[in-house]
Image (cartoon, rainbow, N blue to C red; front, side):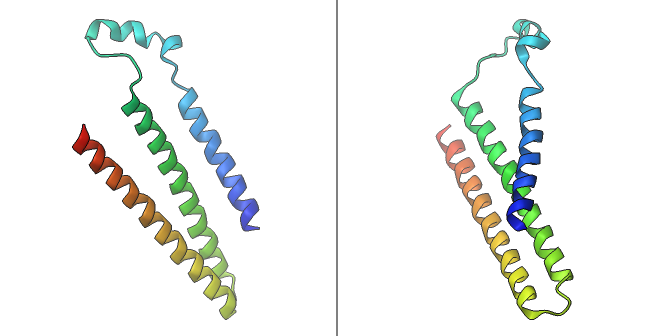
Length: 118
């Protein structure tokens, strides 16, 4: 059941992410022409591309973390005193927290190194 729940959540999250990426198309909205007189650069740089990818990955990580916490909480609440279910839900919560800390630490290190080099 967890696999189905995760797949559905990732699919729905992917739809929202794809909608946010494809919603803004500078060529079709006239933003490129409007920004031409401002002196701002209009090209896509490697830094902005990496930043966009990191934001997408963090968005998916947040979705997965939220789903795992909700799933573990529901499992704990519906365990009806079953110690095995409570232990399993605690393990899921701890693993989700550790994973979130690792991902956020990696993001902090990447941001720090990027700012130091840039």
